[in-house]
Image (tube, rainbow, N blue to C red):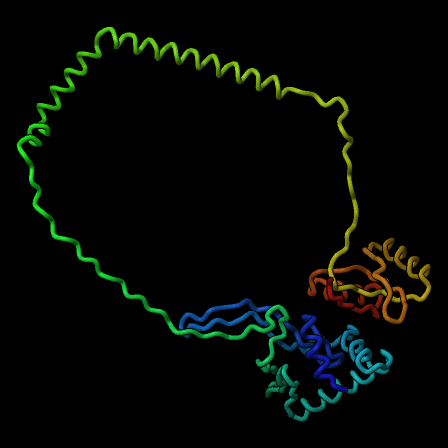
Length: 309
């Protein structure tokens, strides 16, 4: 079987692909970046790593192999187990294990597994078609503008007389004397009357606004309280699969009485009704919950990862 190809296909769709009994390849999204020194733009990509502690079978690789090879899940799982045994034997013998377009695994002197990503493949589907781009630095010359030489200012005798301070003060004094008479008294009286009229208009507008804003609702609508559980997430903890729908519903009720947010998530390709303990949007949170379920309730529980629409 072409397990390297299967793993590569799954890494485009999932963040974690486990080889049961061997380890797991993990994908972490890295944002696009710009290197100011080399003037290079790097697109976003999915950085791969390997975790030898994740060895529990989640059914993902075996299900994909069974679908690709048109065989049963049990037969595909046996092939996966034999594949994992060969990988462990190669590493134990000191050989490197190469996964095409994924990376290379090897053991160091301390017995730890090292992983070196291949680097030529970007498993982030949203970055499809994007490549690294380099450009030459752009330099701009700032033009120097010379200021023109100051020209001497010519002032005529008539301008000097207009700009003389005593002329300005004399004009201001004559204007003040003219306004201090009867015209000045009438001007200030008009201002006072105008302000009083405007104040009365403003008071009327405020009173009308208050009257319009005062109202009562004779028949208010009753308050509605909704308490609906809306599960979300594509990481499901599978409790079992049942051919008879009534048995699946009984299992859901049993798990809900035990405190789980159990529900039905539809049928699988074999026509079995799947019951889950709960659904999670975060993979780490789902893995933690799976360990708790296995320790306290069902050691055969497993995680199903579905791609959201």
